[in-house]
Structures are given as C-alpha cells and as structure tokens.
Image (tube, rainbow, N blue to C red; front, side, top):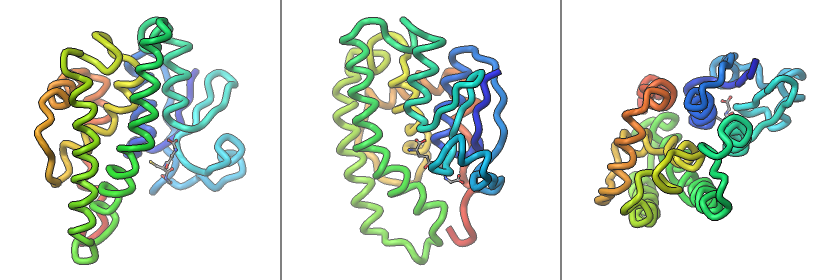
Length: 214
Ligand SMILES: N[C@@H](CCC(=O)N[C@@H](CS)C(=O)NCC(=O)O)C(=O)O
C-alpha cells in the first residue's frame, strides 16, 4: 500500500494527501516531522536525505519532493485526468505549478505563514510582512487573469496544477493579511473548497500551530 510519511499539518504533506485522496488511492500516513520528529533517523534519511517531509513509498518506489510526488501520483493513477494527456494542457499545468513554487510559495509560506505561527507578534516586522503580502497579491493577479473563463488551471477539469497551487490557497485566504481583489482566484478557491479531499486534507485549522505570543 502507498505510504505517505509526514505530519498532516505540513502544507507540503497536505498536497500529497489531497492528491492521493482525489485519485482514490488507499494509503497509510505515518506521522513524522514537527512534533513527531523521526526525520533524523537513519531509516527516514535513507528515504529522504533532506530529512524533510513528505516522502512516499509506493510499493517499493521511494521518492521525496512534494510537487514531484503529486505529479508522479497523477501520472501513475490519473493519466489523462489529473495528469493531462495533451502536451499543451500538460505544459500549462507545469507552467503554473513551477511558477507557484518559485514565485508565490516563498512569499506565502516561509515569508508570511512561518512568521505568523513561529514568531511572537512583538518580534515581527509589520512593514516586511505587508510588503510580502503585497507581492504575493500582485503575483496572484496573474493567476487571476489566467483563470478568467476557466474552471481550473489547465482547463475545465482538476489537474495536478490545481492541487499544487491550490494547496496554498487555504492559508492565503485565512491569514490575516491584505489581499487585492482576485475574483477568479476566489471563485476557483471556492470550487476547490467544495471538494471533500480538499476539506479533509488542506482546510485544517492552523491557529494551534502558533508559538506562544504569535
Ligand atoms: N521542497 C520540499 C520542502 C519540504 C519541507 O520544507 N517540509 C517541511 C514541512 S512543510 C519540513 O519537513 N519541515 C521540518 C519538519 O516538519 O520536521 C518539498 O516540497 O517536499
């Protein structure tokens, strides 16, 4: 059976759990990382030498790096659906996925989210956080324009791009930050939020992850 190692509170684990649930794959999810530890053990670092979560073992095939895992699962278990068969549609899915991980993720997750949960409010730099929120919002206006007339990123069906980019949206829309008008992103996010696999794996309360004073 597919094993997905990693704590449910990690956004990079969440996208893998969401993809597996969306694809209807049975899986086990041993909790490692964060408060569960165990990523420094020789067994785990053999699976993921970065000592980060997630890692997967799909019947003996071991790999790490969350977005690559989502693409792998989509290709093996959802070819022609979650992984588009058409080369141009696939390219669009790849384009927005790579864009989100290089352009939006750094502002949103290490930049804003980690600050909000790991740094006591008195030690934060509000101007720096506001600048990051502004940049993230500006970047998401590009996705907003792309989603005009589309239900999902690569067309009318959910693909791995929606999983990888969409996994960021719950935190984006629930963090106490300034956001620009993003009507198409908001409509797309509402479509994701209707899906039980998204609700079960991504829309998870995160306030309790805060350190004292955060
Ligand atoms: N680029 C990697 C990043 C993995 C990563 O940063 N994972 C974080 C959680 S989101 C982690 O393992 N942190 C240490 C821990 O949870 O113990 C991926 O997408 O898989």
